[in-house]
Length: 327
Image (cartoon, rainbow, N blue to C red; front, top):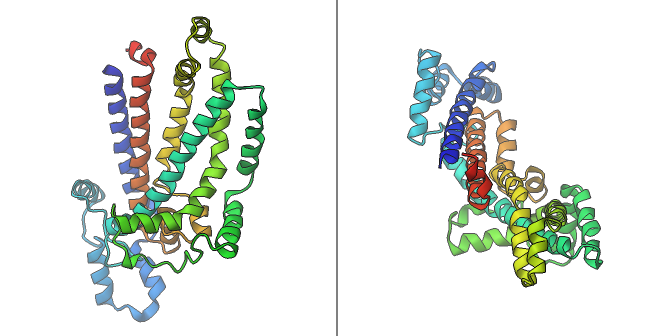
C-alpha cells in the first residue's frame, strides 16, 4: 500500500512540526507561568515560594532552549505534559482527562448521529428528488441558520425549565461523585446532561450532510453504471446502495474534518449548558493564563485532527479503488 505509506510519512512530519511549534511558541511569548501566578497572588509570595514554583514548572534551571526542547520530547514519550497552573498540583494530563471524556460523549455522539442521519436522509431525498421529500431541505436549513448557542438556549428553556424533561442545573452538576470512564453510572449521567446539547449540535449541523449527500446522489443517479443497473432490473435497494457508495465519498472527507474537531469540543454549546467539556476547559485555561494546560489541549487537538484525517484517508482508499490504482 504505497499510498498509505506516503500519507503515514506525511502525517509523521506534520506531527513533528506541530509538536515543535507547540514547544517554541510559548517560549517566544513574554513572561512565564510563574510571573503570571505572582501577578495574581500579589505580594503574598516570598522568594522561597517563587523558587519552589520555578522548580515545579521547570523554570530557572539554566538549561539552553534546545536542551529544554529535547527534554520536552522525552517528557512527551513518557506521557508527561507538565503541571497545570490553575489546577495545581494536578498534572495537565489529569485535568484534560477529566474533561475529555465529557466532550467525547457529547460532541462525538452528536457528530456521528448528524453524519448518519444526514447521509441517510440525503440519499433518500436525492433518490426521490422532485417529490414532497424535498421539503426536508428548507426545514433542516432553517435550523442550521439559527445560531446554535441561541437554539441551545431555547431548547434549555422549553425542555428543561418548562417541561422538566432534562436536568437544567448543568452549572451546579458535580462530577466528583461519578467515576469518569466507560462505566454505566458515568454513561447514564453523561447521557442525561448531554441530551439537550447533543440535540442542539445535531439540529444545527444535520442540514449540511443532507444537502451534500442529496446533491451528490442527484449527480450520481445520472451516471452510466446506475442507468445500466436500472435497465437490468436490479432491485431499487441494490441500485441505491451502489449509487450511495460512490456519492458518500466526498462526505467521508468532510466527516473526518468534523470528527477531528470532536476533541476541541463545541465551545459555545458547552458555555450555554455549563457543560464540563474540553472547550470550557480551554476557555478557563486562557483566562487563567495556564500555558502548560493550553499547550496540552492544543497538542491533544492536533493529534486528534491528524488521527481523524489518517482514518479518513484509509477508509477512502478502501472504498475507492481508483485511489489504489494511482500508486
